[in-house]
Length: 123
Image (cartoon, rainbow, N blue to C red; front, side, top):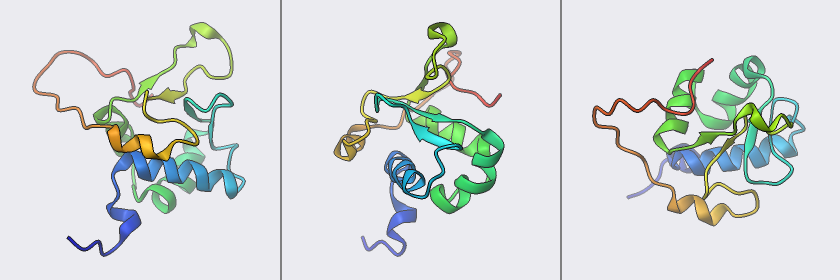
């Protein structure tokens, strides 16, 4: 199967990983960034993220679509209990800075009528 637009066709976790790396190089860490420990990322400004990051970096037009993809790939949100800068950041055991090869292990979660609510929602 030939890929016409390789970046566009990549799975969401890899596109997100590459977008985080590119936004860092582009000096956009005031909008979205890896946490210092490299095990989570955080959206610092949802409005700017929607305006300046979603379409050019992730080929998405709407924030709810982005959130749906996070849920499909079973990302979780760090609770505010810790009270530090990482509260509200999103993480997945296979989504680690410096380890792009791990995103290939991430699988889509099929939700068949369960009543369990996702950990991440649009606020």
